[in-house]
Each structure stands twice: as C-alpha cells, then as structure tokens.
Length: 109
Image (cartoon, rainbow, N blue to C red; front, side, top):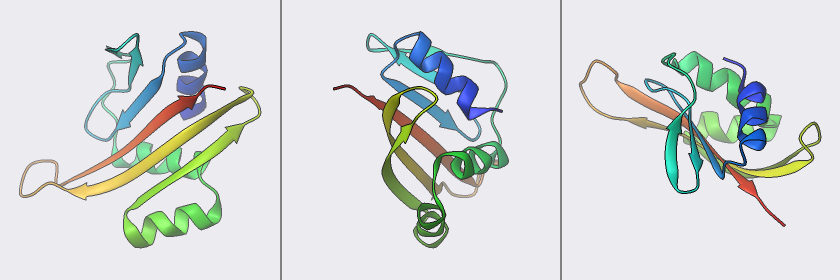
C-alpha cells in the first residue's frame, strides 16, 4: 500500500494522525475520531516498505537495531512536516506474532 497516497488523504481531510499497523487497516484521526481509510489489512511488509519511504538510512538502521525509532520529517510534496513513530513489538504466541506500526502526526505551525 502506498503510504504517500495515504498521507495525501491525511492532508486533504485535515487529519491530525495517520495510523498504519500490520494486522489492521489504515486509519485517520479527524476531530478526535478514528476513521478507517481502507478495508485492506496491512502486512508487516507494507509497514516495512512505508518505513523505507519515510526514514533515511540512519533512521532505518536505528529501527533495525532497536525495533523503535521516532523522527521528524519534512515532505516537500505536501509542504508539511510530520512526526513519525515506528515500532515493532512482540505480542506473544498468537496468530499474529508481532506488531509493526507507523504513526504519523501532522505538525502544525
């Protein structure tokens, strides 16, 4: 799934947050309410691909080593700055053995 398309929708709909989690669907926070964007369930591969699109080489390395990274990023195509939090967390012996998620927060000036 294309994270940039979802970010464009986030900007167009004036959402404050975008939640992008493996095992779930992409969601937006708009006026305090969580709104689903799509019905497709995201895979860990979707989240990892989005990580590569948003993070620089050093941030990707930090994520691989610590399974957690937070950073700010300016995306020129949206003329906006975002706060990005990416984490990978073991959740036990369940069908989905790990959670990998990206949260984007639109920073307003």
